[in-house]
Image (cartoon, rainbow, N blue to C red; front, side):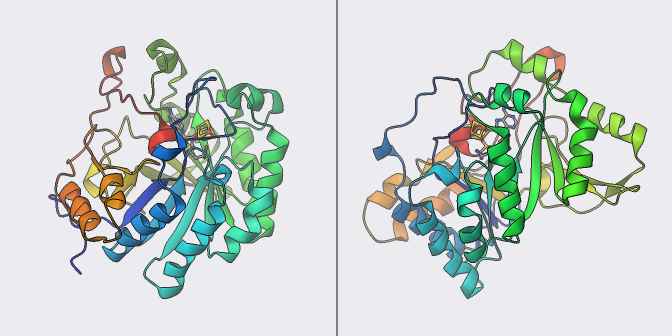
Length: 333
Ligand code: SAM
Ligand code: SF4
């Protein structure tokens, strides 16, 4: 079968799927406290998610990342992981992974490892319990740390994702680096993105450019740029003193689009060809039109033929341009 190649000759081999918009946290940069969630009937069922992901895998997707919302709060989500693990078994899929807030890992880490998950991303912005409660509103740090511990025990490699928030976790830069070093976790910093409908002012207030963060890191460590690219927005450096690898996801200040190999599907089956553009294709209708996957495949191919060259985020001149109205919890970060 012809695999998916976009108009700029980029093969589409990486799919991120949001399996729910719901979450047990309410991180200030991601959701409002009284978030209105979608009606359940609008969400893809686990069977629909299975069909959808399996079709993408048939079309050449090799890497699948499950996200949300919080993927591990979706009821019976392990059934979906088990279904996807069969594609690992057959060799069609080379990696199955997830991005999680870690709150449910103590429960699920073992099963995830059994399903062939080898690496996970856990979002953690602070190691201070009070600050953690303030950022996540509903989260408890010790639960997440227990979850991370369970993941490590189950043999999963953990990468910590930390959103760099000016005036919030700036003073923990080295604490987080040291902790990850001690625990053997990779660490990636994410620049806060203009997602959702949060006040523009607050967003610009929290904006801590990663080039500043990098300059601070360079005051203590010798940094070596690493050439490796995942096709995504992350760039990596090695801290020569400790050998740690630190990532930077700077979608707003660097153009990473030329090597983009990924697309995203929301929990309602909307396929976004670019995180920073509004264009999308509805895959739920072809999924629900009947059991035949031909319509679905057609809709996917038509959408990929419209994948744009890049996005338009721009924080310059203190304006949030190209601001997207979708929340990260809907699109999946
Ligand atoms: N609930 C899971 C978690 O927190 O890892 C998965 C979904 S969450 C939307 C995925 C990632 O997006 C997290 O690392 C989170 O920190 C990040 N994120 C959410 N809102 C963001 C924003 N406005 N800017 C940058 N990153 C954001
Ligand atoms: Fe939930 Fe993740 Fe969004 Fe935080 S960042 S509210 S944990 S979806």
